[in-house]
Image (cartoon, rainbow, N blue to C red; front, side):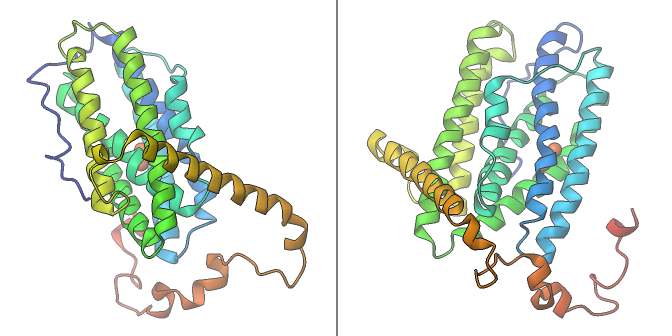
Length: 299
Ligand SMILES: [Fe+2]
Ligand SMILES: [Fe+2]
């Protein structure tokens, strides 16, 4: 990952969440996570768009991991004596409303940025929750989330290489998701008790989360200067350009739908068209990591 565990660790100064006293708050937090994990079903959509064999294999495994995380949070809810409940609208917007319109948007916004935020929240719960059985489950899950974020970072870097317009579009859309995180922060700040030992750190924690997101955008190369150097107008222009580009793309798609049925229309290349040129298939050798049943395949 482009950010270390240390860089993504917020100092709660030893404050703890009590599984009994803070049950209501924990129920709210875990239900946001539960919704996020459930959106793992969207991976099915992206598996069909995978650009190469390694990406397809990664997504297939990730889908399974996210469904296991659903089970994990159901277990944590039941261990804490909590119930599954709906997620906050801003969380639903971030996880579903911001669903990418292309592979680049998926890996940049949902994996590097979105799962990056989730990972930061997982670390925060691990560092504050005073309930070992839940922490043990979360510790195992974060190892997998770290790999999801890393995949998003690597794929985003690949996608924007030599495409300045795409870099700008991803930056514009990232600004919207940073705004969404601030909405969740505002809600938590207004509605949750501010004198709580952990919650009183919330405004600083959310500011920290956005700093980490900015650092990640810079290390990937989506952002080429500190965000503070981008004025309000420039930010608005980036957001408008990103959405206008998406809208035009959608319109063009709609208008060309009948044409795309014609045999001469160039078809979008999927893995089923390109696998015989895929490095994994071409370079396949018996006895190599790809040619022998690995631990993953057996497990
Ligand atoms: Fe997950
Ligand atoms: Fe994940």
